[in-house]
Image (cartoon, rainbow, N blue to C red):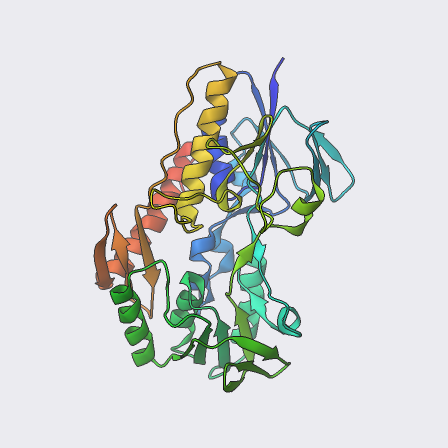
Length: 366
C-alpha cells in the first residue's frame, strides 16, 4: 500500500522535502498550502522598488507541480491529531497521513503594545508586500518608520530611501546581528549616507495612527512597517505536539517530533556547533527540508543508520541601497561589500530559481 506523505507548507523547506521524495515509488505525495504558489520570501523587499512586480516573486503551484506526482490541497491547517494521523483544515476537511512534514513556517511576532498590530504593516508574505506597496506608491516623500534592524528591515530601508524619508527603530545597539560588527557598521554607514535615520537601543513603547514612541523619540509616520521578529503559528499550541516555551515543535536530531511526524524549515529551531541558535533563513530551511525528505525516504526502505544533519550557512548577503550590498560567503566567512555583494545576492536568487525548476522538471519561466 502506498504511503501517504503529506507536506504541510510549500516554502523552502516543504518544496525541498518534496523534491527528495518525488521519485519514491511507494509514496503518495500531497502538498497542503493555502497560498497559490511558492513565495520567494528573500526577494520580497526588492519587489517594493518602482516597476517591480510582487507576482514575479511567487512561483505558481499550478505551473511548478503540473508534471509532478504531487496532489495539492489549497487550504489552511488549523489542527493536527497525532494519534489518529489527520490534519484538520479551515474548510472542515480532514486529511489523513502516514507521514507528515510540518513546514508551515512562522508568522510575524507582535509584542503586546497597544496599536502595534492594528497600524503596523508586516512583510512576511506576498500579500503583505502588495499591501505595503500600495501604501508607499501613493506618493513620494512619505515618512516611513521601519521597526526592526535585522535582514528584512534593513533591506526594506535600502529599497525605500531613494523615494521616501526612512527611519529604522531597533531595540539593540547595533544592526544586523547575523553579521559581524564590521560588516554591520558598513551597512549602517552606507544607509545613513543614503539618508536613512537610525534609532538604535530604542524600545518601542507606544503606537498610534500617526506616530510611535521609541525610547525618548517621538516619530511621526505615514507608513509604519513591522520587521521586528517571528513566532510559530498560534494553532500549534492546541495540538498534542511537544513544544518549547516559545511554541516551537521540539524534534529529535532528525527533526522527528512524534511518530512519523517531522518538522522542517523555520519551525525547526537548530543549534550549531557553538550551541547557538542558527538564524532562521531560507537556506537553512531548504537544507532542513532536503534532509527530512532524505530521512523519510531512507525509512521507507528501512535503510539505516539514518544520516546526521549538519546544517551549514554558506553565507549571508544583505542588499542595501540600489547596487550595493554587504555580507559574507563561504563557511568561515569571506567578507564582501559594495557592488560584489549585491551581484552575489542576485546570483544566489537565480541559482535557487533554476535549481527549483530542475527539481520539478521545468525550465524557469522568463
